[in-house]
Length: 173
Image (tube, rainbow, N blue to C red; front, side, top):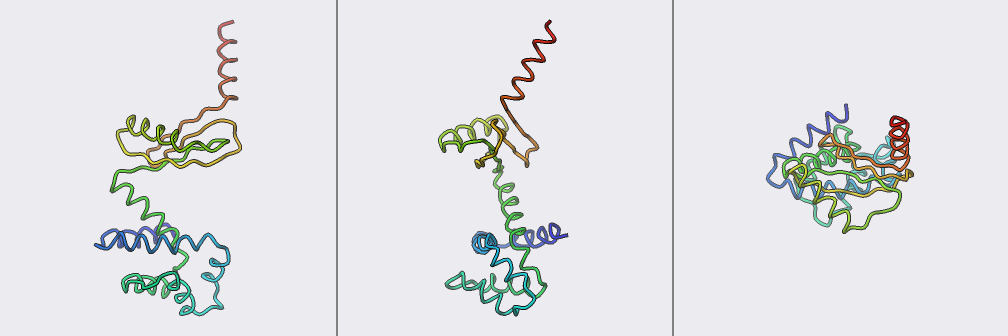
């Protein structure tokens, strides 16, 4: 349900001429949602809606009227908690519009920026689209590249490699 609502709000924002300003403002608010105390305040029924709006507007020096009005609509409908979902959908739609696809490289250790850039370039050539990769550390000793938007996943682990080698040796015997 939240996903559908977030897509509706994002669609309305995408059609705006001041999309970039809107996106930047909502992204700034989205950062605050990483704090559990902020989320508690937003979800609290004990705190007045006007106080919630004042808290959010305190992030900006001089917020544009369109942003304030949008936040008031979200507040009136008790949907401030949708802001992270709206920002996520806006990122997806913006990437699709610019034909930039995002992916994640999971590895045990962090990958150098230069190697990540080379990987982006080679995958971009392979798929004939622009790809932006982020690196996340994982517990596995292998490497996994996930391009969800393209429906593509590449993984390599030593355990899988050893299993395939032993299977190949057993088949040849």
